[in-house]
Image 1: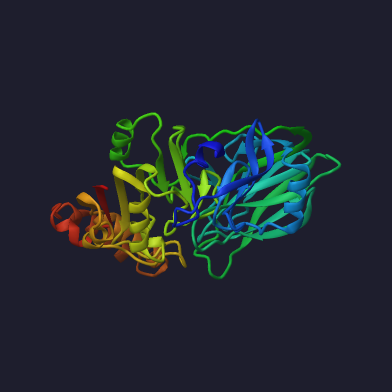
Image 2: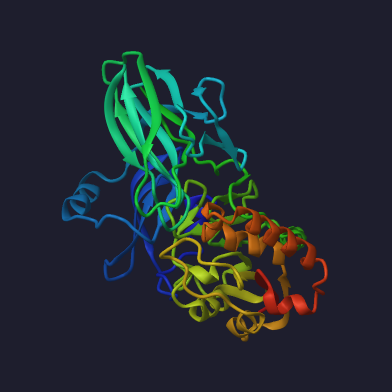
Length: 408
């Protein structure tokens, strides 16, 4: 959603305090950069490349205020750039590789010699890695000379981590990436590539556009699309904690805390930066277990929804710890019902997922690394066989995750 349109919805997080936008840069007749402040001059968010950031942003300095007061907003120009997917044939891979989620490619930690090589003559070269709890350490060579190591371990979630290389002379550089070890906290040695961004000397005017429709996280439930189809052209749909999801629908807003590329706005689910009664539909999946106060998140969702608006929410129940350091509360079916007790017409259901949960337990405890691999495999097969005997009713007691649909 364009900043000018989204501005109509925004308020100081968790309140109805109105905010005004101080624009420092325009692009394509749309606000590109600036900040949001209240009537007392307190800054609540930055506008950065068409996206509002209420989470982590630099303080506005006196010099910035003076400059915008003296010369006003400027027309923005940025270096032209291009993106190359990790799956592109331009990249040369040596050794065994793996592909994940339809967009990542790399190495799974094999001991044999493995490497990624490519060439570029761009002014600035950004290698985009995927950093997560199973990531290792990658070495980077330029023209056959060792340049640096980059530790890709990130314990909280999967994020893009960029490694930037300057090339002012625009020489053709030969780049090589290969694994060299692991962080002691990491559960693996994976080196995964998202892609490559190359920047050039010529300047262009950035044009607002949503990130291409994609899903690099959890898929939407079918019920989400059923509700979306009932909404009018001016409706506002917010995916709270949408992660690496994006839709082409201009009504859709992905609000996320983590610094992914797909979100439209960065904010906190326990203090939503929207006016009360401004949203037509909220969807949130696999988020409640990651906030410090799920009950407050429920109250905030209720506050910003219009009367009669719909909610679909999901939480982990019998899932093991994931996103280490950012996983706090799993909810039972009763817990998710309590979290949204202020809503009416509540319908609670669950995903039993017994066999998949057991596989998850085996993975995080690294049972496969023990000397009892045959026992582990029998255990997994037994869980598959027994899962078929669990009724939908009894599945409530051991459900992998729980859901609620409700109306304000």
